Every structure is written in structure tokens, then in C-alpha cells.
Image 1 (cartoon, rainbow, N blue to C red):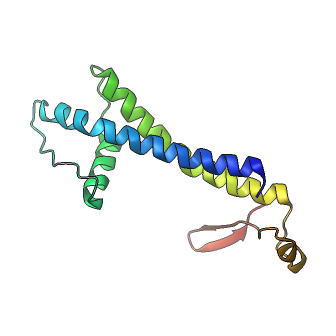
Image 2 (cartoon, helix red, strand yellow):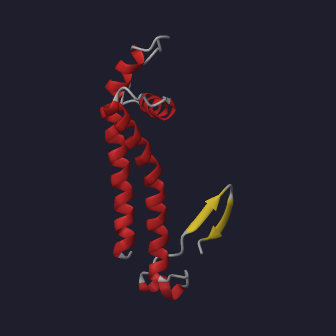
Image 3 (cartoon, rainbow, N blue to C red):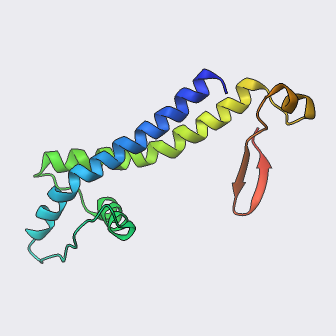
Length: 131
């Protein structure tokens, strides 16, 4: 795989780690902020060892209206959202760039030379080779 494609893939992984780090830092602040709301919100503990707790935290970070009076929490929520949006875009771009830069067409000669096969994009059950 060419270096630009590898860099895009690594940037996608770094974006995911940054996003989850922001979620870990935002969890206690989000919990404290939600407990102080006028109509009290039942806030469960966010347990990162449990998948349900992680899913609950991520859904809360996506659905909560970003508070303007808490700039640190606001920044953490925005970093989390931006990281989760950027991660699949960067990784998909890396996969497509790897295919385009190698010029692989999936033939037997390319496979024998060690060139990876073309990227196949599957959307709603239909598969088409990437352009």
C-alpha cells in the first residue's frame, strides 16, 4: 500500500482515538451538567467496560444540545463529534487512494506481483467496484 494511503488510514485511527479520548474526558462533565438541569435527567453511570455504557455515552454526546455556558464541555463534545465524522471518511479515502495509486485491476498478474485487489463498495446490498 502506498505511503499516502497508509497516512490516511493512520489519520483515521488517530481521529477515532481522539474522539474516544474526548468522550472519556467529557463523561464526568456531561453527567454533572445533566444532573443540574431544571427538569432532572436520570443519568446512568457511563461504564466504559460495558458496551451499553459506552453506547449510552456516545448517544448522549450526539443528542445533547451543546451548552454555551460550559466552554470546556462544549469543546469536548465538538471534538468527539468531529472525530467520529472524520474517522470513516479518512479510512475510506485511504482505501480508495491505495487502490488508485497502485493501479490494481484485480488480475492474476497483479495478485502475483503483490498488488492488492480493487476496493469494493457495498451499499444496501449492491456491490460495485470503486471507480
